[in-house]
Structures are given as structure tokens and as C-alpha cells.
Image (tube, rainbow, N blue to C red; front, side):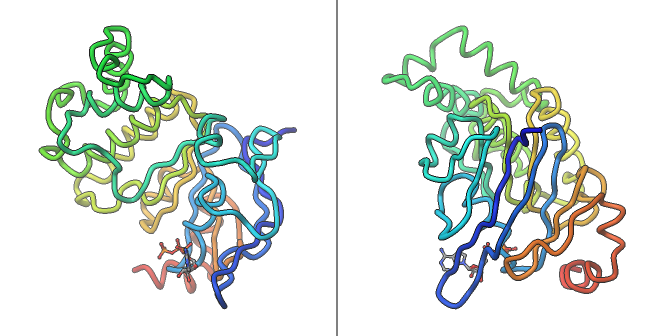
Length: 248
Ligand SMILES: Nc1ncnc2c1ncn2[C@@H]1O[C@H](COP(=O)(O)OP(=O)(O)OP(=O)(O)O)[C@@H](O)[C@H]1O
């Protein structure tokens, strides 16, 4: 069976630090994977290698069975791998809808993004995305007026505008008020399922991992220490000692 994403033997060092040490992992469509692990374990490095921002010294990344290791980030995005960051990458002085229209213009490689802002078909498509993330009411509000939770959702919608098959997220709810966190995740996971996008997310909040991940992979010192269901992994004494104990 072809995996949606597969890595084989990834290695990368920064000076004396081994940030990826023989990382081999398979991700299958429809199974949302949470990546957990102590600070500096190499979780973000893994996302950066998969999206082409870092090139491993050894190993390969396959997307839908094809080797994407030598491709540029832009080429990998075009194949269907999107990325969302800890801090939303939005144009804060533009409205939520304008941010989505700009992303759609980039997706369609339009030379004149201003024209895209007026395109009725694009506007309808992007309003539909805003509807999927419960944000139609803020479509015409400037992004810097929105709550952090709303900004995170708009950032996810920007990624969805690229029509990915896989979305890699670095701490999707970091910076979101704890009262808002689960609501944001609820909307996010539902929108991804509706768009048939598989998610991989780095997460430090074990409550979020337990509720929203189908599988969990534990990173430690550049290696994958364990992989399994949230119930198996989160109750394992090594994980409680190395990860959960450290985070709490
Ligand atoms: N560009 C870089 N240059 C030098 N060292 C780096 C670079 N990127 C990562 N590192 C180092 O590699 C190790 C892994 O970093 P990484 O950011 O992947 O960890 P992480 O598990 O995502 O940590 P956190 O949970 O704190 O975000 C760390 O020791 C980090 O300092």
C-alpha cells in the first residue's frame, strides 16, 4: 500500500546536535497524527524536512509514493503538502476574506492578485472555506481585530485554500486561551475531515492529543521513541516520565 507520506532514514545534524536520527515514519490518509516530545527533540525539524525547508543529510521523503526530497518547498506544496505555523502567517491589515483570496491567487499563479480580490467565483469559494471554519461573520474584519483562535482558524483556511492532501501544523492551539482551545480544535478537525485533509500536528497539550489524534508518535533526542494510539502512548510510563512530566 502506498502511504500518503513516508520518510526513510532521515538524518540531520546542527553542529553537535542530532535533530533527526534515522527517522522512518509512515502516515496514512485519514489518520491524524500527533507528534509529542520534550523541547528540542526534533519535532519541528521533522516538519521542516517534510516540507522541503530543510534538506536531510541522509534519508528520503516520499509523498504519495514519489520521492520529494530534492524538491523546493513550493514544489512540495503544489504536490499537496501544506504547512501552518505556531504564529499565523497572515496579512494582519487585510480582512479574513482578502487573506484567503490572496492565497487562492498564489495557488492559481495569478499575476494580478488585485483582480483575484474581485473575482466572484473565487470569493464564493473562499466564503465557503470561511463557512467551514465558522468564520463567515468575520469575513470582512481586519485580521488584527480578531481573537487568536479566529486567527488560527483563518490561517488553517489559508492552508486549505491551497487544496492540500496533508496539512502539517506546529502547535495549532498555542497562544489560544484555554477556554477557546477545544472549540478551535473541534472546528479545525471537522473542517479538515470535510476537506479530506489528513493532519499531522506537533502538540504540547496532552488533553488535545488525547481527544483529537488518531495516532501519536513520541520524539526524543532526534529519534522516534514510540508510536501508537493516544491511550497506549499517553499512559506509558516512559512517556509520562520523559514528556508529560516535563510539560506539566
Ligand atoms: N536551524 C538550526 N540551526 C541550529 N540548530 C537547530 C536548527 N534547527 C533546530 N536546531 C536544533 O535542533 C534541535 C531540535 O530542534 P527542534 O526545533 O526541531 O525541536 P522541537 O522538538 O520542535 O522543540 P520545541 O518543542 O521546543 O519546539 C534543537 O537542539 C535545536 O536547537
